[in-house]
Length: 228
Ligand SMILES: [Zn+2]
Image 1: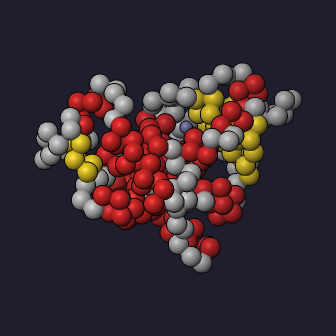
Image 2: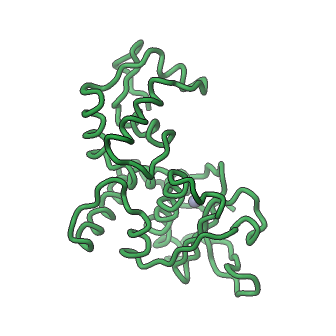
């Protein structure tokens, strides 16, 4: 079921993520550096409980990645993501996005969410269930929040500067990405930025998207044009 949420601009999503990192720094006594400890943000700062389980069987949906139970503050990540640090952390950061961005709206009862039982035979409670490939606005907002949380702009920029100096110009970048082609230059830049910046809980794909969004790569055939 699609969650109907108000529009939030990218700038608002980014400042919500930055604000959470600021609160974490205050709580921890030191600013977080990559890899951003999203599990400690969830369990330590936000006080949510977290488990990894066969969510797909529990909910009877074979494409579930994660779910957040709102009444008891519980996040469950599907066990299929275990061992895949990038996807696991991104999904956890995505669930954090729902908690930060959407729970307040749901609590004001402006949005209704479906009920799911967390345990067999338990009473169903309101939960946000996230499935692979969902593209409604609540899901897109949570994805963007996750990217901002795990890859803060200042940290990504600093790491990219160590790798390339100036933004990297890639031939026909825009056209190739639009065509869904693999862009090896972008992939290897993302790998180097991950390495130099210690973004060990970020996937190469997520870093590629972030580098493009931050204009740390440009299209050599059309350098002035924004890639967004
Ligand atoms: Zn979601």
